[in-house]
Structure formats: C-alpha cells, structure tokens
Length: 476
Ligand SMILES: Nc1ncnc2c1ncn2[C@@H]1O[C@H](COP(=O)(O)OP(=O)(O)OP(=O)(O)O)[C@@H](O)[C@H]1O
Ligand SMILES: [Mg+2]
Image (cartoon, rainbow, N blue to C red; front, side, top):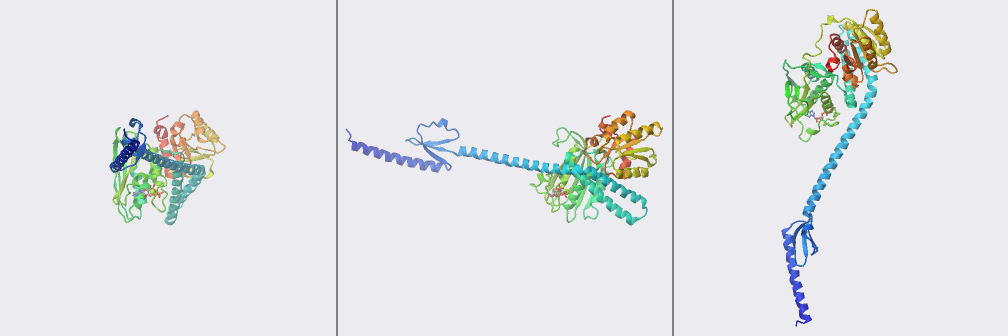
C-alpha cells in the first residue's frame, strides 16, 4: 500500500511534469502563432462552437489556445466599411450643402433677375441705338462697344446664376456650331500668346442648342485652356459628327451628335484632381469661382448632351462636348432677305424702357411697332387692328405683368381670336417652363431679355417666315 506521503510525492512530480509540458506547449504556440492568442481554461468548450474564434491547440489539463485574428479581421473589415460609408455620407452631405447654397444663390438671383434683365434691356438697347445715331464717330463707337460688352457680361452673369436656380432650361434652336466656336475662340484669345487651330468641316449638321448657354460653355473652356498655357501653346478646336450607339459607355441617348473637342498643350490636370473639376467651387486659381465647369456640366445635361475631360499632366487637356444633332436640316438663323421685312408688330411689356427699346429696334429692322402695357390691352389692340383690316403680323409679349394679365394667359385669348396668331414670348426669367417650351403654350417664338437688335430681328424673321418654337418643340 502506498503511503500518503508517496502518493503526494507522485502527484507533485506529475504536476511538475504537466507544468513543464504546459510551458513547452505555450512556447510552441507562441512561436507558431504570431498573432493575438488567448489561453482559456475551459476543458468543456466545444471547438465546434467557437464561431470566428480559431482553435489553435489544447493541452492535457484543459487549457485551450484560441486565436482572435479572424474576429479581428472581421472587425477591421467592418471598421473599414463603416469609415468608407461615413466619408461617403459626409461627401454627400457636403454636396448637398453646396447644392443648397447654390440654390439659395439661384433663388436670390431669380428674384432680382426680372428687374435686372429689364434694366439691362434698356441699357443695352440704348447703346445699340446710340451707335446707330452716331454714325462715323469711331471713338464714341469704341466706348459704346465697351459698355455693350460689359452689359453682355452682366447678362451672362445673371444667366449663369439662373442656371443654378431651377436648372435654367435652355432655349434651343437649330444652330450652326462652327460660327459659335470661331467667334468665341477669336474673341477670348485676342491678345493672348496662344495659337488657335480649327478643324471644323463644312458639312457639320446644325445642333439644337441655346446659343447663349453653349457659347458660355465654350468660352469657359477656352479661358481655362488659355490660363493653363501661361507660356503660350496651341489650342485646337475640332468638331466632328459622331454616332453614339446603345452599347456606348456615354450616359446619353443613342443617336447622332456633334462632338466638339477643345484641346490645349497646357499644364494638364493631376490624376487625383480630374474627378473633382466639375464639382461646384473646385478651383486651383486664386481668383477662380470654380463654377465654370459646374455650369458647363449642368448646361450640357440640360441639352441632353455630355461633357467629358481627359488630361495628361504636363502635356495638356482635352474637353469633349456632345451636342445632339438637330432634326432641322438648316440652321434657324439662316436669315431672310433684309428687305423682306415688313408688317406691324405689337409689343406688350409693363416696363417703359423695354417698350421704347423694342419699338426703336423694330423701326430700325424695318417693322412698324406699336406698344401696350398689359395682356388686356394687347387683346383689345389686336382685335381693333384686325377689324380695321390692319392686323399685326406678330406680337411680342412679356411673360409676367405685375397686377395684370401676362403673356401666358393673353396668348390663349389671342388664339381664340386668331388661331394663326404669331406670338413671341419674352422674359427675363429664362428658366420659366414657358420659355423652355413655348410651343406647348401657344407661342411661335421666344426671346430672353435683355436682347440685342440682331437677336430680336432673328426671332421676328423666324416667326414670320413660318418657322418657330411650335415646330421645334414638336407640338402644336
Ligand atoms: N484646360 C485646363 N487645364 C488645366 N486645368 C484645368 C483646365 N480646365 C479646368 N482646369 C482645372 O479645373 C478647375 C475648375 O475649372 P472651372 O472652370 O470650373 O473653374 P475656374 O476656372 O477655376 O474658375 P472660373 O471658371 O470661375 O473662373 C480649374 O481651377 C483648374 O484647376
Ligand atoms: Mg473656368
């Protein structure tokens, strides 16, 4: 019979052996697994129930070694995903804030645009008239031209701001793009070291564009290119007809487009900056607003077109504009013979300065103009003229008349009187739906205030020659 002492001695030796074995086991595990390792004293733990905890090994007295590295990996992954989500959300919120900011600028601009554009119509109109009244006075003409240029820039500014308010629906007509490109490049690059090359085929089809808006886009692209070549360089302006197929990666409807490319040999855009250039307020220029390309993007989208950019830092940048080819075979501004201008035109506007300028313009254009201040008066005058056998050939009506009948209601009544009435809508709110789709509301033409004599002549000629917004809008 073994004595108690012997038994104790045996157990102590056995414990020592086990402790030694355990130390070896831990050393082995530590060496083997260079990662988060935990030793648990849980002999009953079932290895199948460990989930993401990985069983590394166990020792004879029930200590198990488990690794949390898989748990840790999962946590890391979740953390990364959340961080990404948070930063995306933050970016989205920032974009939203920017959009809200732009919207409030737009609302403010929209609020003053009506009055501001009426005033500009007056200023611009009187400048054109002064030019006609002072023939041969070259020095005065130079001042008049400068004042006119400043006015046109003020007009562009209101239009640019309006684009943000409700999208600034474009007033589109079939236009020969080559002239717009040439005019814009030559005007912008005057006095610059930059050499300009054009590649504009003669057989380019007309495109359905708002000439003012697309002119503004091209202008900004050329100014950007010029600024990207401080030491001079070459600017290339090209236009080609392209077919966009259903499988094309471009987010535009399949069909025929004129692709305009504006390429420079300037500083280029760093790869990481390229996705940001269309963001509102993104600018690398001390005096830039960072709204040029944002506006361009918005304008092209409203034209059912697209703008893209590619750039090679140090070599240059190319912007491409995709403009839908018009269904009209000839540009709208193909002018009728000037001497064919005759007829009576009625002008309805509540602003005296606008009426005066319009009448004076019409007179110079060869039309006989008359003016009234509200929709009610326009209807009465139209009726009287018809009954007297001296009907008006066209009516130009302001869209909004404070406290009176505006153009939208008046044109309906005029159409009851005369279904063939040739009515033109005029407004300083270029983002009003009537201005974007005048045909739908019964107008044959549209002109945004402020306008120049040439622009007024074009729209009246168009309407009188049977063209106009109704057919452009594709509705009666
Ligand atoms: N042709 C180009 N070459 C190099 N960088 C360009 C070019 N065009 C645009 N960029 C970059 O994109 C930025 C945004 O251009 P965008 O026209 O929107 O604003 P801006 O030119 O900075 O300011 P603004 O047009 O209001 O004067 C520019 O600041 C510039 O960094
Ligand atoms: Mg710019």
